[in-house]
Image (cartoon, rainbow, N blue to C red; front, side, top):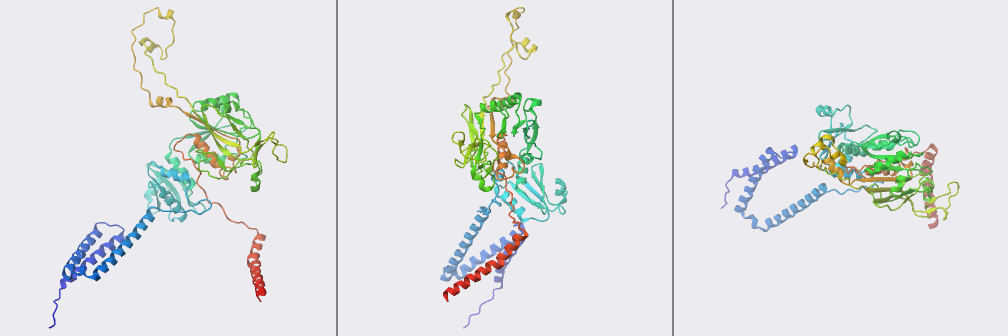
Length: 563
């Protein structure tokens, strides 16, 4: 007898569970927001599916069957693989491992940029007012963002969001602004020929964070390099300091005979004539009160700074530094190539980078109590370099009686701790003394006898203010001496690490702890090959005619040998 199974249409309601779950999942996936609406569909769907699984297991006891166990194992293994892949994907997104194989590390932020971003005191945001997102610019901004969560960026269309554009005062497409708190600053304007620069972005960010005014004075009046452009000018060095937030001003010590109190650093760049004794005394007084001085003194010049240098244990050699290893790169023996740098904040990230100094004089360092010195630049050892005394001879040869073997020191950084100046403690004074003069003057016994002294009233000792406390703390004066000034002039400043040596020296001398010291951000190098018409024709003939012909001749020779 055939058993008739009753239809149970209510079982079709269980299909409502997967349907509700898929509706909620699709709504959340499309909208990108897992809010109330997607959850309102997904939670009932999951509850219905779970109820159906429990009910089905009690009716058929399929959990105990071998096929169910095999299927469960397969499901668990599949889920485990998916979880492992998800964790790998999560770790890959969270912790990225990038390797930059370009020659100049073009796609890696410079150490200066990395250190600055990691030490951001508050969140900053870059606003790029442009409709097109250039891949190169976006990659640079993402490199910044990877260093710290406090760095954010956003592309804005000025037409679709005019309120934000008006707040920043945007005038044209491509303008890039930096915002931190209530501070805003224009970084640069982008166009077809100019893309977002790491140099400008890092320097503008440093200026925005560092709100203090840092003044660098350049001594003038003795044949020093002019601050403006022109022959032997240092306008590029001045521009580099301005981009790092410095205020550069000329200083004529013959008029003032005193270094201004707001001077963070004073630079003597290539003085050709002697300074007056009063000017040298003004520089000494500046160092004695915690100043910072950069001296760049060329060979065959005598600015009469020996009294100052002797106090620090520095002596300038009158011989010329010679490096015969530079002849292969076209610099000549009178331009020493430096790849050996001292362990100092100025040169800590230089590695084996190159800097060169045309016409440089060696520096000798002697020990002085209270002065710490660190050689910055060292030439190659003998026989590659030495100090040449005979500058008239056309053939350079080492003379052991007159010349000095390398390695030679071409630059040195020195520090000197200054003793603390204690603030005098006020002594108890009488009321008469307090009213007559704030500074008590000694009196003779004859002056003290005419009238009896009133009863002294002791005044409380005033509490030192913050400024007085800072005066009681020991200060440190710093001095950097180079036996060359040509490396900071226009045209040479931007070659190799020459500009970094100058800018990092000024940054260290200014004693600004917030200043980042490292190699400046890099710019892409121009690797285009420019060929003349004849060179292009030779290249075409060699690639289309000569090389194929050589191949055919080689094949014919091999065939003939094997024939």
